[in-house]
Length: 355
Image (cartoon, rainbow, N blue to C red; front, side):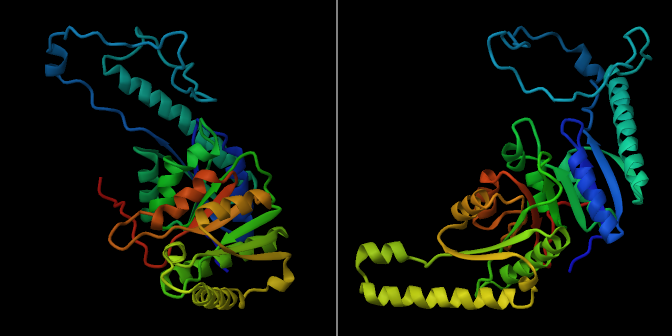
């Protein structure tokens, strides 16, 4: 069983952070782990140069306000409090944006300290750190610098979980972070009634098999600790079945025989994967479904009211950070629950410590 000892928790002033912090505290208590809470503020653009300020105005119509009858850009649910910003007269003779940035950083630092104090009162050793830059890049660099073994972040964004998972900080982390990433849905209870392990013990893909072992290690450990029901699913297809059927290239009886052989091979590999785990001690359902995982896994998760999916993200050789066949991305766009993703052994993040 993998035990997390050095957990990084990312908080964001635009989202609800209590759920992910409380989940991290519970996990740290069980594993006697240290928590590091980080918040990232965007880097400030460089101030205008003397030459910029001396440039003559350009006679171009520029729209600076949204029409009243149009949808404006989304606003944060809980904007940063700027009540203590100085007035223009009170600002020192420096770039005003720098003064504003410093006050925002101070507000966020105080917010971060409150989370650290909350965690320490729970008996968990914790520290806080402010980062500056693009959130997913700075979080991954923090993982590389301090050897964190788990990143936890919240999934709730302006448009809800699905929008946040795809094309967001969370999605970038699941693609590129070298350690497991747990994206928590704030509205879910801490205890998951059902945990789904999406495995792929494909005979020809040893990398996939090792990822499936990691998935089962985590899923069974979590199910045991939470007394949750474990749902294991493996999806499979028979290559070129549709083309062979349409083209009448082989007799239907011969094709049926090939498909039966493939099904039996997948059953044996799935049984081999599951054999070391004490599934008899858990309430367990095991599915081996024929079809595309991008469709079947979200449908099964919704039908079984799964609270957490444990799945793998695997980079293609030579294309670091991509998900094989975009299958994982298709799944993540459709699910409405928390997700814990793992990488294969030897995964190398495309993010470096170089600025």
